[in-house]
Length: 155
Image 1 (tube, helix red, strand yellow):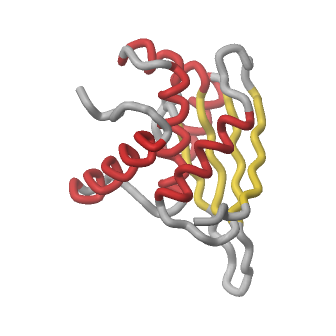
Image 2 (cartoon, helix red, strand yellow; image 1 turned 90 degrees about the vertical axis):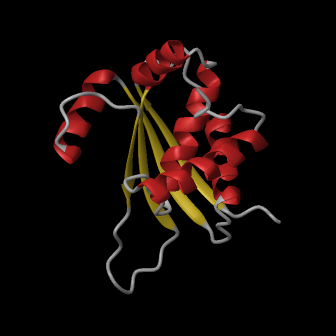
Image 3 (cartoon, helix red, strand yellow; image 1 turned 90 degrees about the horizontal axis):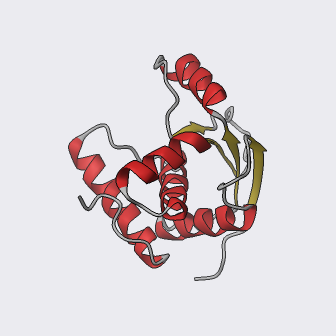
């Protein structure tokens, strides 16, 4: 399958120590798009934030007053507007680092997982219902395996 045109913007609003570079995010986004069989041109942005901004965004948009690992903001284009934009991801650097340490995972692998997970949310995947969660987790596991990353859900 030929590569899907991707426009990706990565912004760093947190300390960059331990945070992957833009080419890594690009590779993970491309893997998620391939895994989801998205063949159309795609545009999205990723913003890396600190705990303060992550908490504020999670509180303001989800009503949960704590910083979370990844927030997905799917775009809602008005009728008749045809753009490749699928939305924005916000990834909280200290939460990802803490979770990786707590779960005994390589930090880079957890960054990849959070990126893939967020992209799938932007594409409409969800994990609210059990059957949706199983399908989404299975897809994430396949995508990550293609990147040489172990099953993130394997306890």
